[in-house]
Image (cartoon, rainbow, N blue to C red):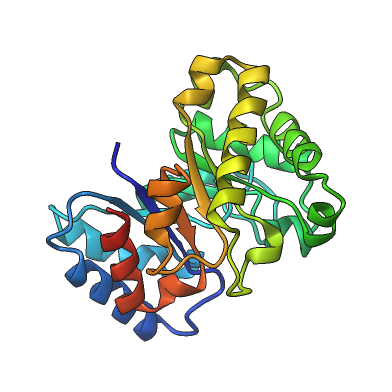
Length: 254
């Protein structure tokens, strides 16, 4: 399986010209790289333009994803984006439950569960983000936190459906800090996630999961998270806005 490298641009860049420049630079720099799957998740407003670019690049391995979604297909939900809208722009993935949405916007596990179910119904792969805060880590509550996030987020999700869900372990304390989780720690947490899934479904299901690492990923550490810690890819934040660095991340990962 090719490593999955997901770029989360968050609320960046601040204009369309910069978005085009980043996207074009990444595409050009990865033309000869075929051993990784790359997903760009820009702000919603840039999706139409990037979709138009991709429609001209038949052989491009880059795919589009979204940073969030709503669980209803249409209706009076001011400010929300439906999965049907995302599908119109060939979005193959959607990030759900990112710690910034959980923390800043108070998204609950129940809301996240609805979004996951909706994404699956539209054939868009959810990237379910889970991870502990600094104080939860200090109190040694990592397993309890992850178990709650996974079990509630996957409520009434079948064995067949979970095959289309990607997990991203993002220790909240590491995001944007420049201090990623150590390889040993992240390896242990990956195994914990598999254990939680095995308890809920089966060991066979758990072993097939795609689990990404996110939290201060850079070109100098990405290979360790994949080769040594055993992750199947990474979710990249700030570094994905630097085309040169992101290209190196993809190359080093693959």
